[in-house]
Length: 221
Image 1: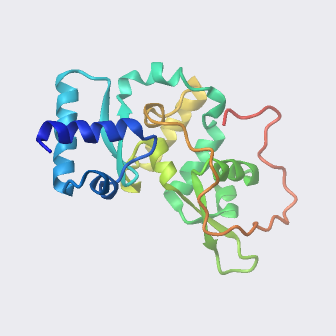
Image 2: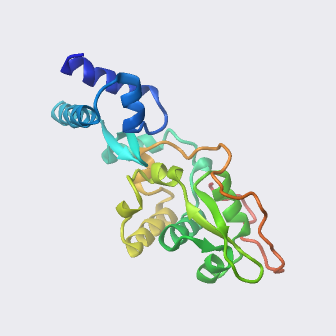
């Protein structure tokens, strides 16, 4: 396979998938070496920039995926139903988990100041967080962490690509002020609605009689 066909083949695979493709998967399909694939991706991105295309190939959640550029976020975002986006409460809870994982529900609630049972259930259903076992203390509260879907949702390679926690807070403030989400999400796909990525299916004890964080009107989640 010559260089042109290698690039076209990789491009076709990335267009045909709605999830990040790992180097291993591309290698299995094409029989190309990993360094050849990385080189092709770099050349494709260079061609996209030179021809002023509206997208690029990004390394996301352990694989490669095609994303639209941030400057088109306003128009791309208009395609998506706002009801499927995360609310300010969802982003706030997700940020706490992302920067302090593994973390228990009581620890999340200590930061937020409200019961977070309902919002955690929503994030689990969207596969943005997962359970990470239980804390070995009385009551054995469940610990939570982020998933690969979380990385894909925000368009980042790994947790090391997260901005500083205080900067993430500014992004949440933007949601409240404008009703829009961080540009990473607007570039990429909506979060999966399939079953959550969990390591345990045990229910967390909820003996506390507190008011749930469920609003009078549905969040835009």
